[in-house]
Image (cartoon, rainbow, N blue to C red; front, side, top):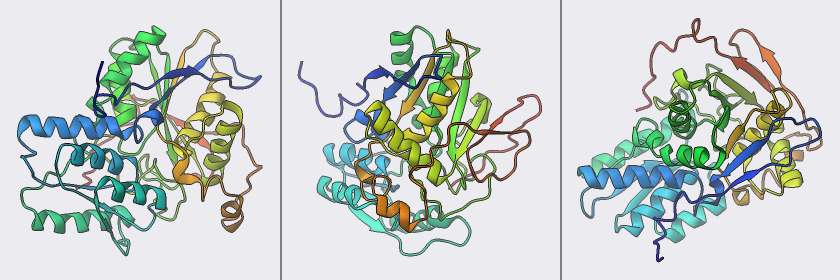
Amino acid sequence: MDKSLIELIGTTPLIRLRLDENSKAPVYAKLELLNPYGMKDRVAKEMIMDAKRTGQLQENAPIVESSSGTLALGITMIGTYLGHEVHIVTDPRIDELTLAKLRALGAQVHIVEKMEQDGGWQKARLNYLQGLLDKYPNAYWPKQYENPQNPLAYQQLADDLVKELGRVDYLVGSVGSGGSLCGTAKALRERNPDLTVIAVDAVGSVIFYQTDNPKRLQSGLGNSLRSPNVDFSVIDEVHWLNDEEAFTWTRELAKQEKIFAGNSSGSVYAVSRWLSSQVSEHSVIACIFPDRGDRYIHSIYNDDFFNVHHLNKDNLRLSPNRMEELKDVSDWTYFHFNKGKFRHEEKTAVY
């Protein structure tokens, strides 16, 4: 059967991980990193196709978005494939490989020069993007952080998990915009109300009420602004890993499982492997690996990078601390939400 590149998005494999001698419950990883450019291809496709159906994206109108990673690639791939001019607003942290891919695919890339004092690089990019909207009043802005099509894009991922596994007891995934974990969790919980959902974040990210550290080295997960698409009602537990922990676990993922991935996948792997040793052998754990490792060859997979940033590449921490009350953390720590006690009072607007 002939399929276009866009139609192939989402046809990703599910594998059982090898884990280690302490593991009890099986862990199955959905390799979203094997989409053409990564997991966010699903989101880009859903948002753009819905915008064309509803008329938000008019024929030949430009598409503008703020992104420094895989969403930028997905939007560029799909937008230019469908004949739209694509403008990507990013910042100096973008890696040279992603930048080269964006330009090769035909994106017009705008790199902001200075972060904002309040809101960091994210705020600076959004301010620049507003200027593009003034210049192109008919442009379509997907707004990944609040677009409902973001979480809805993962209905099919949840369907695939249920089809292949029968049931899922634990779901582990990284959080940035909130779409992948919350969208998948909502769909899975319709089949299993007892599903436990575990979010994975970065130390220095504000998503789960930590103090922002815009100089953190991790990318792909975490945020300096809280996204309305992070649905706290479906999340039971959150784990934070610092840069050294995330990067050493990403290397361990390559060494142990032979999966060359980015730090979002590495952090999810750390939490999933530890979780496997804590629950019943009859439990089924599913996790989502969103990002490939090719954009990290000069950082995570480079010993000189570890040395420059005073990171210990041999320090593989095997278990987290538990925190009883929300406060700032500096290393791998988890917090279990008491849903009767904890309330997310408002969705903080990103835009």
